[in-house]
Amino acid sequence: MNRRRWSRLASWLGAVGLVVVLLAGLPASASALGPPLGSHGRNETSTVVVEQLRLKVPAGARKAWLQAEQETWGPWLRRQEGFLGRDLLWDAEREEGLLLIRWRSRRQWLAIPVSEIEAVQGQFEAAARRALALNPPDPGAETPANPFPLVDAGALEWVGLTPAAAAVEVR
Image 1 (tube, rainbow, N blue to C red):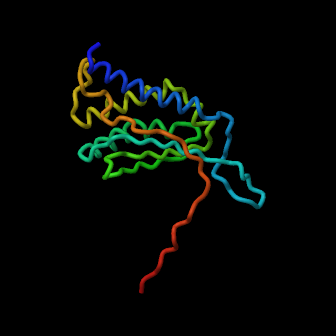
Image 2 (cartoon, helix red, strand yellow):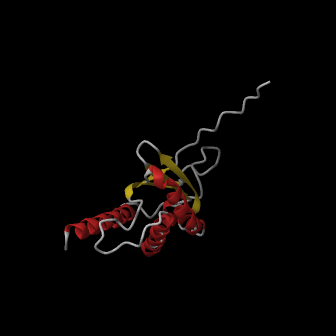
Image 3 (cartoon, helix red, strand yellow):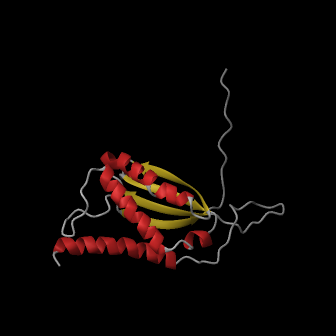
């Protein structure tokens, strides 16, 4: 294999490996119906899990990233059991997208087959290439299949909420 193929293969395997390690390293026994609710007879062990993903998103490609997310991951996520919502944020300084995906429980999140995730990821990459007017990846090409490669992934447990300040009426 030439150097470009090795580089692309290593990049793809790294992304898949990260997902597998992340999924394998998380306990599957957590069950939750919502965020921690505090005392007064409520379930204090309930935990919402937040999947955290960082993607490389150059400034000039931000609109294409959002369009591809809306076409693929958005509709798919809404059909998943335990999906509570997601936030898409963009860091202009790092040129990275941050996705915070909320799940009712770790168990529901991890119950999704990896094959389904890979299929939607393929659809996302194809939609991103279309939005960026890129040709499909050539097996020997230097350009990676995913225009928005994964930078980091992790999971957070929801522990509390600070309510927004009350609106101040100006007279």
